[in-house]
Image (cartoon, rainbow, N blue to C red; front, side, top):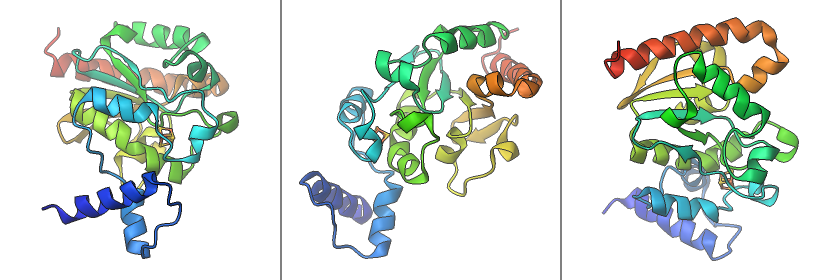
Length: 226
Ligand code: SF4
């Protein structure tokens, strides 16, 4: 028996029964906050759990959690930060002006959004579009990690400051991971700026462009495209 899993399961069960206070010592609480355990072993089950998720306070301000959309066969994943109010309203990633911008960016490297499965690091919108807090990221990260595990992308393009906080326990600074292909388990991930950041900081447009060229090169190497 996996004792750690059983303990987590028991505490999650108590939590679901409505116990807001779990009489556990701080080590047990830490274990729960890490929350890397979810029993869902298919995308469908994971999606069903996500739809009703109330694991962090963001469930109170969202209209709906955003699962993501796109091509599950392409082995390319694109991870954004967290839904904005339009994405929350329409229930999918990258809508309106951000959709146009994303398409332009991907076109510059001969790809389209249909080549990717697109999702967010944190699945619910935040109040006023503020960055998610560490407790919210911690509560939500299981969904993305499980999506990656089940979809099995070979190459991931991660946009913005939130995704590195999901993949590394000792959170690195964004600038220390940006623009360098990083091999993690069975995939390579490249962290770069989110297009919305470029709108406010046009000076970093060149860096995004350089990172995209690296991504294209990786894509060609991994999928042997010439
Ligand atoms: S942000 Fe994630 S953990 Fe929080 S309620 Fe939404 S889906 Fe659940």
